[in-house]
Image (cartoon, rainbow, N blue to C red; front, side):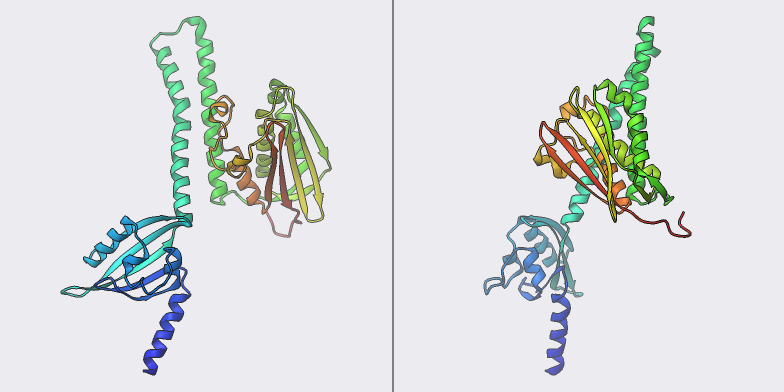
Length: 346
């Protein structure tokens, strides 16, 4: 009896420390043993009435899964609850002649399901974004090949092909950049970098775009040096400034401020643009997410800029925040740690 008691205590100690739900049932689905996580994940409350596995959840998928296990067939299903997605795995305990019972595992797969949804959306969006310019290029080139274009229009159609090809190249480059940051495969070629100088270069590179949009730029602050990847830091400032121009109003302006406190460098890019509605703030860093799809299609870009910024900031161990007022403007604040270069660092 002492050994049995110790065995039960040990079993209880192991199962109650599990974050996964565990249920052991006999061939009639009566619960022989279970842990607290099983009830939490299935959002059920232990009571005298919950003596069978079926009483814990009334979902049709769940019941079908349990019936399969009772029939000797391993089964799985996904349950969508108010607090997240749950994966239920029911495995029969078979003897040579019969099913003696079964074991049920319940796993919280909310994050896994979210990532899978994001992966599917990303694949779908990439396919769409690639197909659009390719369709245009194919259509125009087909017309040119079949002599359906007047000689005076050849130059214009050639320009259209080049513009669509540029759009494809930009999209592919952004996908490659994002992939490298995702996999942390960007070479760690850290060096001392002056953020103020990078901002000056970026504003100069974007001067033509700003002029076309009738947007003025200004740079304030001081020369702040940090240890980081120059290329990746350029991506951060470039994408934020590029967006400040694209989503600005005609005759608007944007300002880049480089500042610091003892342990952090700060990059602030603020504009007088259309702003971001509060309901969309939490999603703007998602890949290909567009607040106004009809308007965004008219604006040049791949829809990956802010995703690259978020990953690039994380790559340097920093944080990014955003403040925005609809129809008044947006400000992005990037905080990056100031670290001194150590001996032997590339």
